[in-house]
Length: 566
Image (cartoon, rainbow, N blue to C red; front, side, top):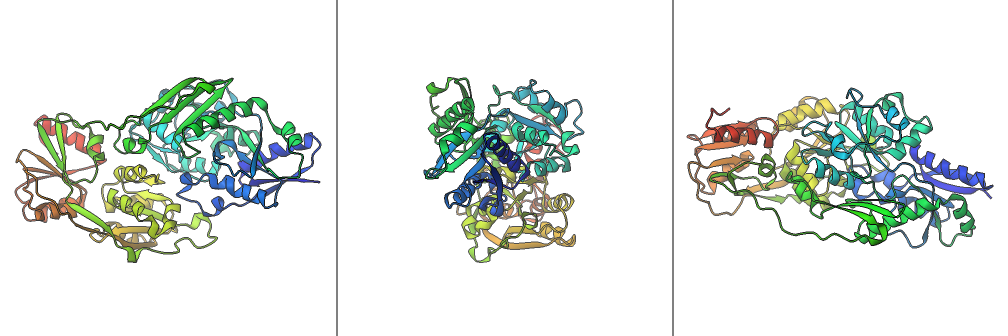
């Protein structure tokens, strides 16, 4: 009898399956590989980070229907709540469980990936490695563990969803989609050992993160083998051939810790056990909100005997914002911008003058044709933080949107999506629709279809810029912007008003608010609205250029120092 070994069809998955097959053949058992496509392979795109377990459960479903005899998985992807009919049969000896931080080839002064893999003893602490990234850098990872840890160490960084097979992700780094990339060393080492890394990928720069300051995902580096519990095979004989006892003991403890924390592969939990000693790091339940407001997410560390691990407790208190003699009044719907700007001696007052509601009739249907290859899928465009929020809250109107890669106009929009559980694949760092269009045209091939959910008050610059370049854009009015029912607050001449859109400019006056001597805005459309709207003609209008928080911080320092405004 020839044992049928089920696996995903990616190069790395095949290498891992071959490792199992070689062990079986060494023990006198004939085996063959059966590459399979799962629902995860066929259907997931932008939403991969919330459905990782589908790859495992998709393969194991074929196991239970008798199509294959055993399945092979990366252990870190195996859900905690494994189907009770599936047996976690064995774990092969673990490869190095570290993460590698990869940089483009032109990042001089760092070892190449090939050199790092050739020297398995050299590690760098997390802060030292991340110090090689510039302020505000984009870092590719969809792992919530890596995102939470990354933002704990460097809250200025922005996680970007770089997806696909390992070689695809490395190619995206070379193409400039991100400034750096986090990948598991085990997968890269297996590809390198089987001569499956392209020369240009071997020349990427790489640093190995040490496990004390950057512990790995539970099970990382280990290859898991599953079988059906009611299988007629001699499962104990297979276990003896395949299982590496020290690896099994360590990974079992790591998964037990993960289960104690109520998590799975989608939880911000790192756990590494070595000879009974556990090194655990877990991010607070509100880590996304902290990150979106550019505050370092709280991460609790625990080191000691694995059996003695204790679940951390979390405070529900929110940090108070700074208050001071000067007042900044903003129409923004969240604290993110002012928190990130970190203004001193300032009282920030939020007065939201706009409300939003979905326009349910116009949402598209069937945006991903059945069987369409992922490279032909559309890119979803998010043109503001409000657009990000309304799309995420409206995903029930078109669930396929969650599967697509998303592109954000700027960092505020990307963070609004991150706070609600979605990592964008591209952030333009643009000021307005016109510059967003230019960034998209530069970054993406002309045949990439684009989807644009808009407000009924949306300005035309983004859509017109894309259409003028011959891009295929499907736009629809996704939500309505209306004036909020609010009572006007008292406004002093010495206050500074920050308006976030042309609609907010109009709503500010229509709700009966006074206008202070100085008004800040972002984008050309808001500036034009301020200069045209009656009631703002005697105020001084200041447009913020560049990344919003940095521009606000720079302007405010100038204002505080009583120097000339720019």
